Length: 164
Image (cartoon, rainbow, N blue to C red; front, side, top):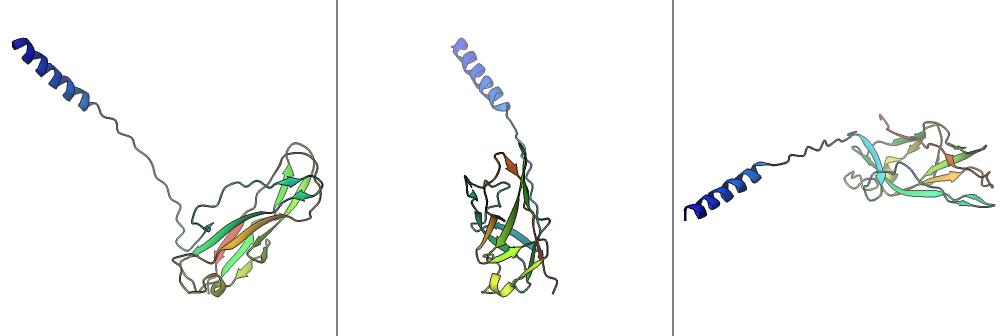
């Protein structure tokens, strides 16, 4: 009986000792917050950091379209949209460049600011559901065949809230 009791006590002590070994995992959570303005996909997901344009031989690049929404803290203020620079794809494995054009909704977006009317973006005057859905379209500026290669470039869309 004494041996059985020692075994039980040892098992209990071992069980307690095993439970004393715990693991703690820390996860750092980050968020970039602009309380005045943002742009997402129409379902609220972040815009992708990269998109692929499909090439058709003898024709050129097919347009790429993302369904987007603009989020604002003030449905009464217009939004100014522009490009940080004229977008160009550069052939990283050969020679050649491709000029791109960008449209947001029906409006061509260039480095010069374009005004997006707040009444059109937020027809109900409410901001909690975001703007109406706006297609963001990236297009080959002049549709034509391209030299073979891997092309890459950046489209930098700048949105600002009008101050009036």
